[in-house]
Image (cartoon, rainbow, N blue to C red; front, side, top):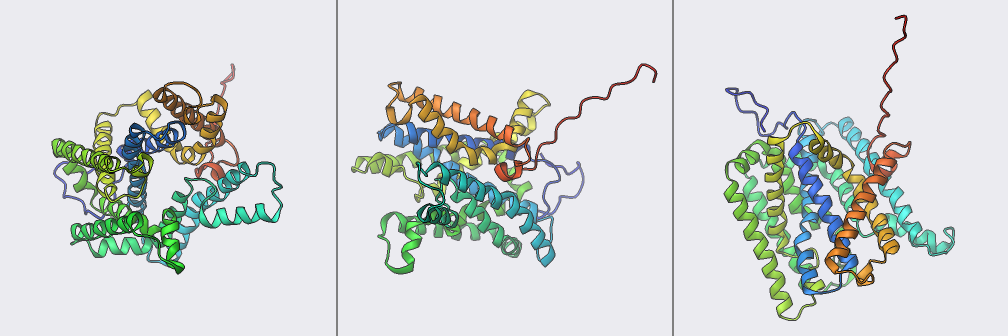
Length: 392
């Protein structure tokens, strides 16, 4: 919903909206929910064709993560002059405190869960911790924070580039998408070379290069946000067609791989060329749903729940593997061990992990260690109403 009054001149495309974007809350909430569902499914189900098909669809959460990251950072940065050294330093200090500190803390937490009785002070244990901090390998999801910190470093350059190429954004995105496809083809079908370049193949998740298209797409969307939202609102059928076509293409690519003998889980691995289409298309569909929610939003339980879920979503992302592991161990759900129907076991793991992670983050967000564990400032306690004396 535009904030420009009727009849007023159209705002500059480079000026960020002056309101809370409730539609982005929906995108963020759906993304984190999909990520937890993907990890729950991968931990509970066996390597079957149906499992792989659902995994193939749920991978959109990874791409949407980075689209939203680029969007939010550029939208915020457009209102600031990060060309000044002091402004850049203030930005880095704030962002690295809110992401770098949780990254370090959760790295230690997940490293500790893997000690299995070994001394944390042994040379091997401390070496593993150092490696986890450097490579983001303490748990399978911490690469996202490493990428985020890389984006923070290059944000002044990204803002300059988006402004500089404002007359050629479509061409820029086409070239970026083509480079992304080439990179994914190399990762998936070309053997790793020798020497230092081998690291590009063995650790692609930790490289900004691996997600450059999605970040740039989010950055351009932020710069042209009014135009993007106007297009989405005016063309719901086109949005549905794009999402549907990309979904069918995504499943079609998976089906072809399985048909020629590729293992279902290998066929559903992340970082595939088809995700250059499916990820942004899914993000477009979520934006349409978010705009629908924002237009119809009224104060009440639904609005409050969506807003609060979006607020704690980063903390939930950080904590959910810990809660998922505890859920699997407590209920015996890992890889068909429970004897329950797979779909039911996945839903139980997903719901328990989501609710358990949310409860843990809500608890942590009210403690002095809120920033360290959730990346958000501590939630202030509500003050009790003052009592009015009888003689006043």
